[in-house]
Structures are given as structure tokens and as C-alpha cells.
Length: 263
Image (cartoon, rainbow, N blue to C red; front, side, top):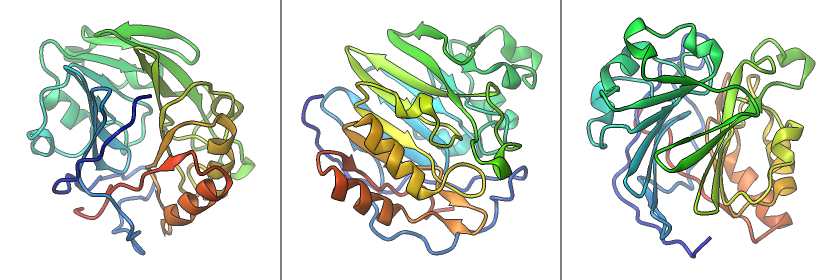
């Protein structure tokens, strides 16, 4: 990956309403070492954190919404989506009211089968279902569906294997990984040639911070963004995550962005 530069602007975050996993309470102990706003890379990628699991990626002239939830107005500052990626059926990933409002006539929607079963009839013609391990190409970007699931016995009911998707996006040899709701599964640890990754860590729903550290060190990426780190009892310690990763491998850049403050 070419060297990157950071452009920090006003924060672009909003609150997520999640009734299915008890994550709609106001978060506590908010991390303080945060980059607000967006990041611009020299490879043509711009990252906009929105909230929790939601983000907007602009890769050259392609705009990608990942798990857009909230309200239509929250996305009014961004270009209309060429592509929408949905990872799972929970309310912090799938918001049908918002989806119906933001989809344009030329928007492609990429989803796992469990999400397809919840779509309105109007969206089906614009939708492609992709299962774990399969790939497709949209707007010049190769997209592979990566498994996402729980490993701990007490958490197996949250995300069974095969229901949801993480995603690897690839263009011009550069690869971006979006974990979705997962633990440190072998499919994550065995990823290769990842330049940028968005990695979840929240209990009890996904994985502990310590396991996220181990996984990131295993697949030796270039830049990692902790996201989806609000859990039942507040925030995971992403500042400690950053310290542990960089203590073990200082070549991995850990970027803490502002995903929650303007709820």
C-alpha cells in the first residue's frame, strides 16, 4: 500500500438504535484518544465512520455503505450509494426503514441469505445474495464473503456460522477486511495480504479485546480500525487494544476513530 495521509475534519457520527442486542443504551467510559471525522488515503480510499457498525467508504468514484442504520438524513452528506453491504440481521446492521429510503435506482445491495428473507419486494431486484466463501465483482471491486460467527459456548446463539458475512474488498491488489460480528475465527486469522481491516470487539456479542489483538497479530495487516466496540457494559478498551498490538508489532498502524460521541 502507498503511504497514507490523514485528513481530520468535523466528526460524522450518529446514534444506532439496536433493540435486538441491548446495545441502545448510552455508552459509558468513552475512549478519549480518537481521530474524528474521515481519513483519506492516497490509494483513492476515504473512510467515514458513522456509528458502531455503520460506515461509508468512497473508493475512487464508488461509494459503499456498510450496514447503514439510523435515518436517511444521517447519510445526506454523502454521495448516494453505488453499493450497500449488509453483514447480518441484527438491528445494528440491518435497518429496513433506512435501507428503503437510501437505496437509489442504480444501487446494488450485497447480502447474506438471512438478510434477503427480510427484504421488501421493491429491493429484491437490486439485490445479490452471497454466501460464505463466495465472491462477486461490483463496480470494479472484487468482494468475497468471509464467515463471521461466535466460538465461545455462551455466545453461540448470537451469530451461528453461515448466517452472516464479513467481507474482503479488493481492488488493484489492495484488500480491505470488514469483520462483521465475529470472534477470532480461523477464517479471520488466516487472511493474507490485508492492508486495512475493521475489527469488532464487544462482549458478550463478539470477541474480547484480547482475542482481537491475537487475531490481528496473526494476519499481519497494515492498518486496523477497531469498530463495533460498544457492548452490554459500555466500551471495549480500544486504547489498550492499540497498545498491545503496537507493542507486539509496531509496523501495524492502529487507528482509533470517533464512532460514538455524537449519539
